[in-house]
Length: 241
Image: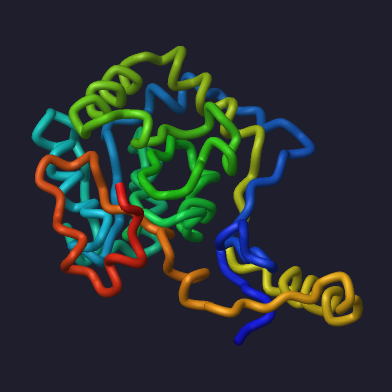
């Protein structure tokens, strides 16, 4: 039996996110049109786990089949980039793809926050409710498009529309991304609870239900999705739909 839960899920007793966005106190001043015009590559994706529950590699291949160019680095692509190589390449790209390995509730990894501050638009594919968690008009969410084809068409059009692209960059730059687990907040929260036990008494009779029950979903935006039965505890972990 456990009393409190700590995880990235917002329904945890002590939510522990991988990063955060903070409104900038001072606006950034830069030549956004020059930034847009300096870009000569489409999308960058850095990935090491190739074939995972979210089927992100299959989704990438579908994007490519519809004429959307993606340069893949890491274990699953052209090899690993040094930090110097990454910093040299990134200004050339219009998009960074932040595709999660699992489509689970509230799951946003540190990579989204770590790479948020660069001059590109992040394309997200995951299981979190991004509209609730991330400011609108600062990213593109694959969930807004039924299939990879529609997303590819949208991104290609946006890449050729200076006004719209610059507008997204400006809106994104109103916020600053910080990544890494905020451990001190977690312990402060725990100490506050320990010192006020009467206000926070709670216990989980079935921890497994809390951790697994319907917290993830299988992708519905790929042409040939895997069967969920190939994954451990699939009947408990994945949504019924």
